[in-house]
Length: 502
Ligand SMILES: *[C@@H]1O[C@H](CO)[C@@H](O)[C@H](O)[C@H]1NC(C)=O
Ligand SMILES: *[C@@H]1O[C@H](CO)[C@@H](O)[C@H](O)[C@H]1NC(C)=O
Ligand SMILES: *[C@@H]1O[C@H](CO)[C@@H](O)[C@H](O)[C@H]1NC(C)=O
Ligand SMILES: [Zn+2]
Image 1 (cartoon, helix red, strand yellow):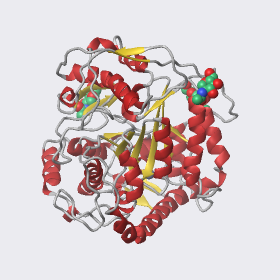
Image 2 (cartoon, helix red, strand yellow):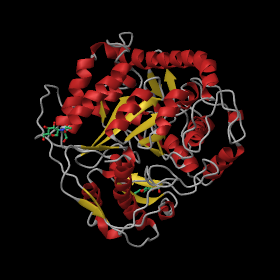
Image 3 (cartoon, rainbow, N blue to C red):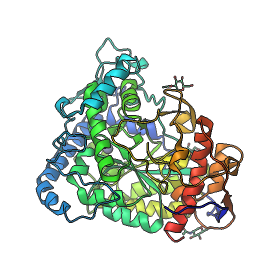
């Protein structure tokens, strides 16, 4: 770990081309658009029905193919260098938590696979009234719609799928910033993506599928080796979480966290629900049992519709109208949007074409006034439950059970208000080798972030101007956590600059 104790200057400037919209597309209403193809309950129709069911079948198929490759890959695992101080979990092996890894596949891990500590923690939170009694929803495969039992008042369960409710989710970014996120890794394309991101020294967030971590050790190796790739949870089975029992959700989240933790030593702090299917019960289980913060998005170009080698997944009705050029045009419109609205962009590391399209998008972003980064760096929050920023020390963790209370985000993630237990995230200063003056981020959070410009792997086009950090004392407590979150960005930038030879 590189240590800094004196002022450190970083040069940054925003000198992008004047943003102008070259797109002829209508303004993009991301959330309404996403829902329309998932489970459109207002207008149930064959389109939405076919898309969601077929999408799930495609997933199951992919998982099955991956499992058949598993033996072959498992043999190669022993020759892979270990990332960090982690171990490589092998399918069929035994976890550090003492339980065998659940079989990879599109079913939630069974109750018998859950370590006692997870179940005990779940029960304690449930008994404390922190996990609401909301019945499971059910997917009607014929109509493709999600339904709760008729006793449920759907307007009260904060379902994103059915009512767009996103209370407590992070789905925005501050003005002028864009969080780059990829779902559904690791895949055979993760290594190519990570090579690109490494060259660009670009921070991103990747929401990973637990099953795929077992099935795709090469892709996982690439992801785990790039410190600027923030790793989050996308469940073990990639199934609709509101349709699961409480303990199935515990297994889906817990096992994915466990696998990331065993590879990297880091305990994930963020998760994204497959298909965005969330309600208040699911959010509470993630937050209370595992300290996981839910992350949604506000931009989606349906890149997942693209097929390897070109073309679209025509078997999925919705995808028939989505071409590679459409996706890239959408990306261009995002990057050129003169409003510079803060965005959280959903992409997928699942096809050669999705990676190719992203690289084009990245070119547009670099030429724009947007600053790009991982979800955590964009909002000045910790990257993991045991690591402040990507170049900070990783706190030793014996398990994935949270050691700090989760943060409580409001306004799409732009603000934090206290925490679930009143002691937001505890004191992250212990994780740092550097001390930073709380005044270095002077002014509002936004100012603190902006002064960092290239914060924590966050990139912007061009470089000049200045931002600096200087040494000073540590402090404790919640407000300090916020200050540290901001300060951490500058520190992260400085150390990243050295490590990557900027
Ligand atoms: C541009 O940003 C505005 C919000 O400021 C939004 O309403 C619009 O949909 C965006 N356009 C595109 C193409 O993303
Ligand atoms: C940065 O922006 C300028 C316009 O201000 C543009 O000419 C240049 O190509 C951009 N650089 C990169 C690396 O995108
Ligand atoms: C989060 O903050 C909001 C707004 O202050 C509050 O209503 C809510 O109860 C808080 N949630 C938790 C889990 O503390
Ligand atoms: Zn997904």
